Image (cartoon, rainbow over all chains, first blue to last red; front, side, top):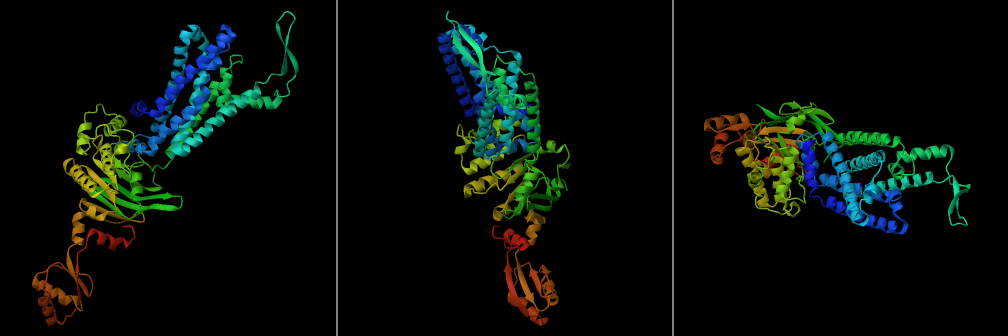
Length: 280
Length: 304
């Protein structure tokens, strides 16, 4: 495993797609912080500390697309150039090859997040000073939840890429899966976070803004449908991601557990399928 | 005889197609084993099985005496190198970078052997040129260099001269001979270019429709393919008596046919046979090559 990982990382530093994605994440981080700085100036410092965290972790959503692209090209090249055969011929087991790819993809995912956060902090420090560090801070459980959701993406896209030797087809399939994952998760979470009553906003004579419960919200989910949506939210990686990043919502401790089970299940299935795959 | 690779009734089935059909073969240590067969005969399938790229449907093989279903087969594979069909190289890397990758995959402690390997395959001057800009022959040689990383003593080459120009063919041939003679590497080389194979191989395995038709050494092949005159006569016993008196080597094939392995004086022989009341019906000079021998074994296929 160590040998394959060192070979993968040696190739990684030369990979154009890796550096392109790193630059993209860095630029995205800088762009996001500029938006945050504009909002902070317009709304106030309190917004930065209590409301802006959602912006800082927004990368987790496009990250699925980035991981899918990276795995398609990185693992796909091993297939298309035939180099995966070199690993098998010299006696590496399929399980080791599979796991080495998974850990490489996982490490790359984390490196992309680091590039993004680095840009946020580097751009944020001159604009907002040390406040940016407090704003970026996330509870450890939520952080772990996000990390494991990234792990789920890494496991899923490793499986897809290692099983399909056709790079072009794999890019299309993986991108489609990534988009479906993101949209389905966000849709489910959006449905679930509907308020029970439609809020009525009014202003008192002395200028205070008053928020009252109005009529019951017809889109509010109840009964079995709500339970179903609650499960879907924590089962779908991007439902779980949205929930983990919402500081106002309480953290669901089933999320890390489900993510761990999903990662193990995907990796186990991937290894089994790869073991039975005929390689040309 | 010590064998590097032995297969026993190996079969491989893809959905409705039987690629290998009970193949049994023996690759002796130190040999250049020419694996001959038409396209689709099962050569590449066998190579994929022994390289661990695919699993056999049934049957077994041993590599350095270790059975394919043993856990230790992985260790015995570390002693072999292979180029299966197209060379397995990263096209966006240089020759040196490709070799460094293979060194890392093998876990070799230093890159010291890389210049020597590049020199061995004649790629020492490729510098920063990416493999995607290499000629087919250069890619093939880089593939062989990668297969040689880690000093294997068994090298498997699948159609190594396919698509190469004459110069490239000569370079690959010389390299293979050099590896076999100077490094004592056993080589299994599959090809359907019989003329090229006959310049290299010390042993042959002729495969057709997934079965081994014939295994023989180069000496045996030479004996089979000797220049001879095939004679059809009315009485081969009389022919044998006359040839014995002339001290000529021959082989009786049937009651009326015999092969004579010498340059004979036709008039003298005909007169001698006439005295024995034996008539000469026909005479034909035969110069059998590997190609004609192959055709005689598997029939005149269109691809061979």
